[in-house]
Length: 136
Image 1 (cartoon, rainbow, N blue to C red):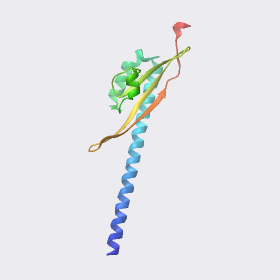
Image 2 (image 1 turned 180 degrees about the vertical axis):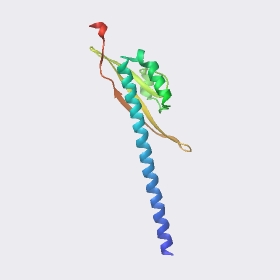
Image 3 (image 1 turned 135 degrees about the vertical axis):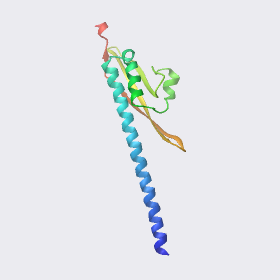
Image 4 (image 1 turned 90 degrees about the horizontal axis):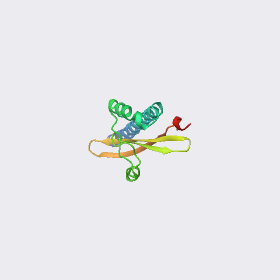
């Protein structure tokens, strides 16, 4: 009888550790994919020198890779800083005296079928300064 109870407890512990390991791996993979999408948006903004020229390319890219994103930041929505209104990401224009740069925030979301979305984390990055050649 002692052997049966010991192996059942060991089996439960193994299942718990396997489920924790799989969850950590899934969250890490989801974060890496979100990070890659953020970097691609930054590359497109720099390549097309601003939001006005890159907006369609960014939307096309995110539709092709099926990026669903997470929740918008309530701070950005309340202040009206986001230049876009779709795809679960936020692009903010920052103006300096040398030019402008953009802050891109994508949102990692982790959804479970029964539980729903229980983890949403922002992934933020900035472009290099895009110089205004018209002003030179």
